[in-house]
Length: 336
Image (cartoon, rainbow, N blue to C red; front, top):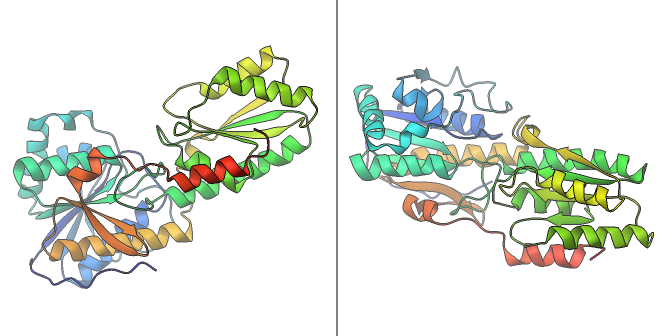
C-alpha cells in the first residue's frame, strides 16, 4: 500500500468540491469514494460536480456522503460522469466556474483527470486564487509527476486479456493480427501490452518506425516461412487509421492480416485491485494535502509513497517511457 506523509493540519476546511473531467478511466469511482469518506471523517462536506467543467458551469452540484458512495469502489467509469469542455479555454468561462463554486460555499476543488483537466485546475488557482488539487486519471499513463495514473493498470489488464484471445485465433490461422491500443501520443499502454503478450512486433511513437520498412520485413518473414502468423501491437499515436494503413500495405504485398481496434473497452470495466488501491490512496491523500495548506499541486505516487508536483510542472512536461522499457522491447522482440 502507498505511504501517505504525516502532514500537519493548518487549514480548517468545511466544504470541498470534486469533479472528474476528460476521458473516464477505471478507478475514478474508487478515488471519489476515498475523497468522500476521508472528508466525512474530518467533518468536511463534499459536493460532487457532474459532467466535469461543463457541469460546473451549469451548477450541476450533488451532495456526496459515505452512504451514497458505498458499493462504488468496484464500478468502472465515474458516477459523477465526465465531459470535455471547450469553453473552459476562455478566461471568462473559468471566472464563472469559480464564481459558481464560491456561491455554493465550496472552499477548494479536487480535479481527477488528464493533462487538459489539470490545466483547467491550474488556471483557476492562478487567475482567481481558488485552491485546487489534481489527481492523475487517464489510461494513457502519460502524466508527469507520478509513476502510474488511475486507470492504467485496469486498461492494461483489459488489453492483455483481449490480445491473449486474439492470439488463439492467430495460432489457428495464417494471419497477422494488428491490434491497436489507445494512448493518444503515448505508447505506454501499447508497449506494456506487447511485452505482456509476447507480441511479435510493437509499434509506438517513442520508437520511430517506417511503414514501408515494417511491411517489407513482415513480407520477408512470411516469405521465409519463419512465421505464418503473429501479433502486431500498435499505439494509436494520434494517427487515425494507422492500423488499417498497415493492413492495406500488407495486402498489397500478398499478406493476409486482420485489424482489431480495442477502443473503449480499455476505458470501461471493473477496475483492477491495483487501481482501487492507488485511487484510494490518492483520494485520501488529496484531503490531507488540502488540510495541510497545499494547493496548485497534483498528488502522484513514487516508490511506494504519495508525492506532490506543482501543476505548472505537470502540464508543461510529458511522462515518457523510460529507456529500460524500450531496451527490454528491443532485446525481447523475436524477429527484427
